[in-house]
Image (cartoon, rainbow, N blue to C red):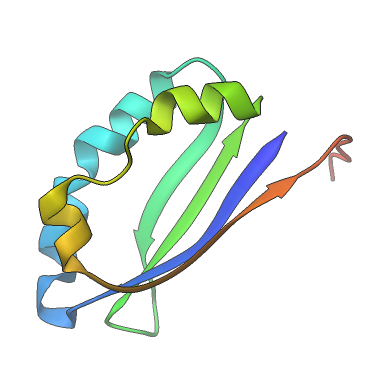
Length: 94
């Protein structure tokens, strides 16, 4: 399993508009082969922060979905980012 987690920083005045542009991406991800979970959410404390959490079954399925990455308009709105991939070979359900 691959977990993608982290955050983006955008202009606080444009955060909701940015998230609105992500609705289709979230919908497409959630029905993509290998997607176990996918969310982009406004942070409760930092007005410029968008939290990212994804779970994928395989690296190949994640790569197939991701393709070329963020489009130009979305990429231009990102002021900073700290997003990482974590690879796990076992799962413990709590």
